Image (cartoon, rainbow, N blue to C red; front, top):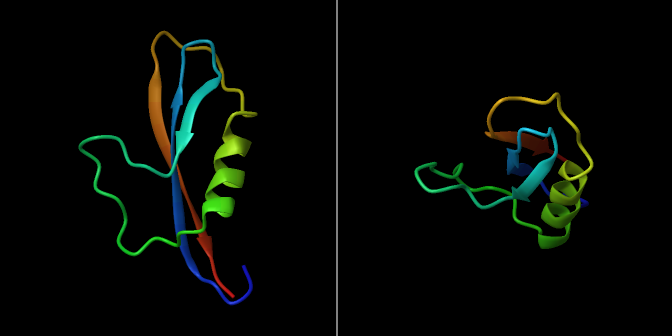
Length: 73
């Protein structure tokens, strides 16, 4: 990552049980991706993998969400 800068947005789905079932840098249909994101496959894989460990409160329905990480040298 030395010298790289930019953003990576992870889009993820949370099911009613509170766990994450999908985490990816690919925007779902109807959501425009951010301009010129930082693309590093290993970084994206690492960030997405971390979302699967997250747990949220239970809910009555599924939720789609996203989080943007900003990197700078």
